[in-house]
Length: 120
Image (cartoon, rainbow, N blue to C red; front, side):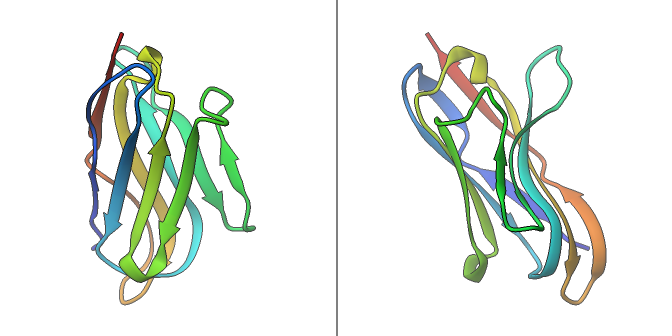
């Protein structure tokens, strides 16, 4: 089994910044998708940012130029750097990794989510 644990959420004023972290309990041999998603109250979960297996990075239009995704393979950690936060960024943020995991095999896992609340 693989566990993904997010942290770094909280309450921030509009215009502020937060950094989310997602630590995965197993190392990755090869991934298909590594990314962040979010779900606001009453809305469906939506894509925020991801690494693709082809080596590129994708962002949702709503966060482009404000958010940045990064990872530290040595620490089994993926980050989401969020700047210029807006009230509409308020949501529960989830990390997701679909990969071939060392010692486990293929699997698609989600974290438990971390709440980000942006006040006006």
